[in-house]
Length: 98
Image 1 (cartoon, rainbow, N blue to C red):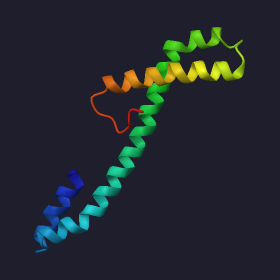
Image 2 (tube, rainbow, N blue to C red):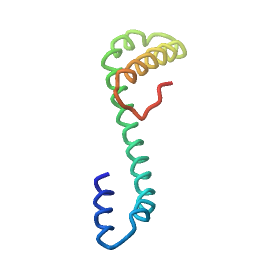
Image 3 (tube, rainbow, N blue to C red):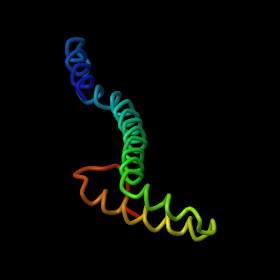
């Protein structure tokens, strides 16, 4: 955002119309937003996975004797619940709460 403001200041010096400057900068702003959103999603999912493993790792280790389908269902249920609670406690997130 700061870069866009600085570009607007520069554009005014060159007698570039404010409206045209906004039109030209909008694609860059949307691209930056998209990139930031993707990066945040990766970091948020990694943070959720790390916190989940810390909280439920021992339980999952104890249940590794279960048949694969049962173990997968247990993991999925625990993770889905944990992720939902984590996202509800987060002030802002790009992730959608399923």
